[in-house]
Image (cartoon, helix red, strand yellow):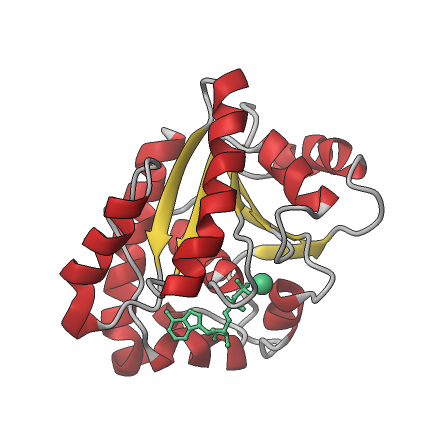
Length: 221
Ligand SMILES: Nc1ncnc2c1ncn2[C@@H]1O[C@H](COP(=O)(O)OP(=O)(O)O)[C@@H](O)[C@H]1O
Ligand SMILES: [Mg+2]
């Protein structure tokens, strides 16, 4: 079986939406029939706790596992888990100096950087961009994109343009709006697909996200 595609979700700041993006993407990819494993690399264990919030009868739609210990362990862990999955999502700690973030970027086929279109977040994303451009200089196969998050619907086009103007990394052709449904799905230990009508618009955004991410991984579903 082919090696799983590794999608690393990283950012310099906490609160940018790494865990939100990771978990919604996991749900969307799993709906498309892919075997998905989320590896929680963050000592705060947001992704792990998220999945543990699910009731027994409706477990989170993807396997979520935590990896701690030295960052050197990631490669072997991926080799072992990667056989069981089509896509592995790596949810990083909120720092690009953290050894786990660096290891996760080194293993990535695709790097996704959620960016809240606010001055502080745009600013901190500069350092992430530098790191990714450096990695791409020595590894041409590494694909990367910025993913606008917490976009205000009234400002969507404007916010996305704002992000595009400041960076040379491409901006993904999909964004997540500021929506209660994204926060609410953490409470139920699921994804916006499980929220019925109140999650419908959010689910359409995740559908788009899945299409764009699959273009980057080259995965067929
Ligand atoms: N698009 C969004 N709409 C509403 N709330 C969001 C959105 N993205 C993130 N949040 C909320 O912001 C907080 C931080 O998000 P999280 O994904 O945990 O960020 P990170 O993993 O980068 O620290 C969480 O409470 C989450 O529910
Ligand atoms: Mg997180």
